[in-house]
Image (cartoon, rainbow, N blue to C red; front, side, top):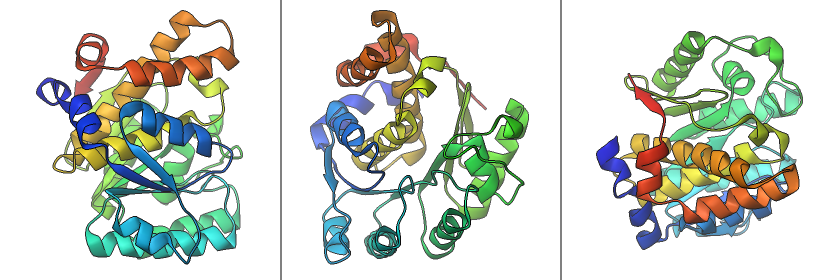
Amino acid sequence: MNTFLKTAVETVRMKNPLVHHITNYVTVNDCANVTLAIGGSPIMADEALEVAEITAMSQVLVLNMGTLNERTVASMLLAGQAANEKGIPIIFDPVGAGASQFRNQTAKTIMENLKCAVIRGNISEIRFLAGIASTTKGVDASADDASSIEEAQQIADQLATAHKCIVVITGATDVISDGRRKILVHNGCSEMSRITGTGCMLTSLIASFCGGLLEDLFHATTTAVLTMGIAGELALEKTAGTGSFRIALIDEISRIDRETLLLRGNYFEK
């Protein structure tokens, strides 16, 4: 992993991957800004008449269920089909899966009809996708679904194996699994859960790293998780409240470099 970290950020910034988002309108601006901050190029196109064309010219596609409606679900499926046909990785963020029948059916439809490269969610969302009882608190993880780190690893392994993808479960300790390999990331801070959209922003970071490092999506995903956690720690050191913390978080993502990743990265490979 350390070898990968030495060149990951520079490679993404050099390649400037085009990241197509069909995402959450609550956090769309932050998602665009973190994509720019790490060196990607965001495009937010969700009209069904153009999504396949936009996806085909992109390096990676984000599908985020944060603010669902029937129109964008149709666009997600069209974009996802275009991505699968072109071999473009899909990063799926099943926001609020388990919270409503509409969200549940949408998540199932995406999982059944599209091949996702990476699925990122909180423990409640991933439990739902894995077919395990969950009690989502709106779009946030429920305290009732809190798992031991061992159980979270088992759930991530199960879902990753079943769908031949990479699964990220975010929490106090982040779990990344492709069904064979696992990395646990211990970076981050509790303040990250006190502002809107850090999960969505992480999904955009994952997409940016994957779009620039297509040859190794597992370590690209892990680097994104490390980047987000370290940026949160650094932002907290410089701010006193949630408003300035949000801005500082994006600042620190824009400033991240290999030295910072190597010095502050707190992870364990299994």
